[in-house]
Length: 143
Image: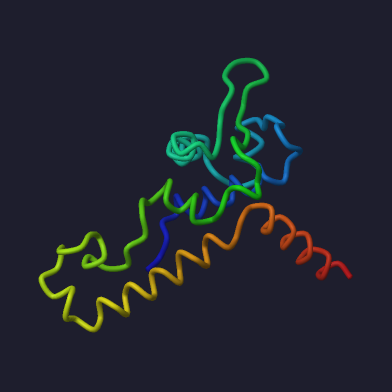
């Protein structure tokens, strides 16, 4: 499984917003420049994030984007779901009965376990934690 470029860029852009002072509105051009995202693509990836209540926008002079929730309340999984929908890994996990073999197939259990572990891992990384991790990584590089 490979996440889409939209999800990768969404995580980067939202992480950039998380590094700003709480409630600070960030200009679209600043996000685009620092994260190397085209304005059109940023608009595209922010639409589902706004709909999911992760990012908010303000129009007009002084307008831009900001986080709708505290960084500690936004997980990587939240961003993933906003961009790509629920994580399934395999067709048989979409809903019970989707596959005729889901009650007997040993792979159904393996796929479900792998998905559940991946979801838990992605939920375990909130933006606040990622900001701290980035600061630590930078500090190690400069020391």
